[in-house]
Image (cartoon, one colour):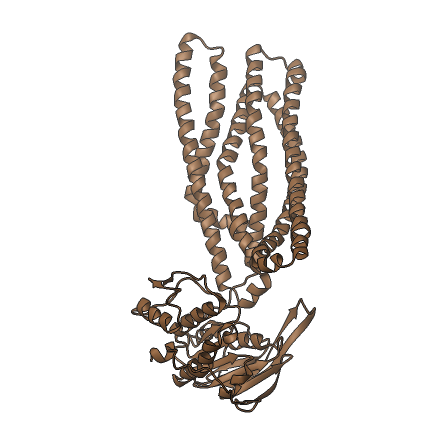
Length: 566
């Protein structure tokens, strides 16, 4: 509950005013009951005075109730926004490895369902505070009428609270279990959309996924939630039963032992009946409190599993890297991870490599050989588990890793394309992008307005060209392309290898290309070959089966963005 306490401290004055107005409203309601009871036996002269008091107190109750609900609603939305941004920043500051391990489902559930549960807690807070104040005020009035009956009321409430605590503990257990199940549901809901093509093409797979996997999880969540709320309903019924038992004991047992007059007895009856609704309202709000408690636990757990990366000191020796680099060296680096599909641990390395400005390197090897994993380690997404990465002869530690990553422009095979040019501060940005769209033959599909693309509804090959455009605008010293040409037509594939890559090299960029296109291997300065996580071969680009290609596509009809923007 530390997150809630932190929010309470940050908004303590607003929370204080909201609680005070809720208590005033609740006590005012109890005061109205007392005035009604007094009016039943008052004289004509007393009725006029009590009437004005009733009007004044009613206006106070109305004003304080409205103010408290407004303040608590504002606090709920502020809490939601604050927790949401805190979680978003935690995700943004976490290491890529931790993000991969946790997956998107849990964080998405936190950013939606759990935060809505927190808002509902604040929505219920005015009722909780007001109804609690009403009950306290009614008990106080009962003490004025008869202290003996007040003792019986306190004893009865204690018995009811003990029974409710037992039921609440079991209900909370089921709510936590259902919340864990919902993480799996969010993951399956994403698969319902992401795997739509595969599901449509295989009827039995679709039936098994919907009728077995999804249905089982939906039913499990339903059962767990139902059990939890049934227990809360039983606890609420227990509370109502205890209240009526208290009324019966008071009227038929205590009143005989401690005789009271008719006016006092009618006062008891009125207060008892009036207390039924606040008590039931208070008990019905308990599930919202428990749901919010589970949500807060989940938020804290997700945040704890995403520790932030070490930040660099902008003025210290680990300050950000500016400009280019002289050398990047991988000195005996290794990396291991568990592959669920193969049910084994994949080991990459130890790898010894060096890169310098102005060279074109091809990274080749079979599927599953570790090429993309090595690429992620080269660009700083994966820290080496052993060995070290040297930038200009200095080791890249935790504090400098984020600065090191800013040297790279990357288009991975599973790239994500944003619909606007975030972080781009270039003069004539729209005009430059429009010229590049023309060169990449995308201007008939996409336009740019204030740094925002008109659409991303493109073929995979066209989307990769758009990602290439974004990478070019970044103008980093090191470019990495992961199977970029795999989805291109023969014309653009030829342009990529014969024009774009050499032009990047001519501008002094280091270019690393992950590729299976052996017909272009001879164009590289050198190649690196991986098999089963091991660097088994390296050499000049012309060495590994390079051959001349007859009937090659002429690329002179296509202008390249790199040549155009020199």
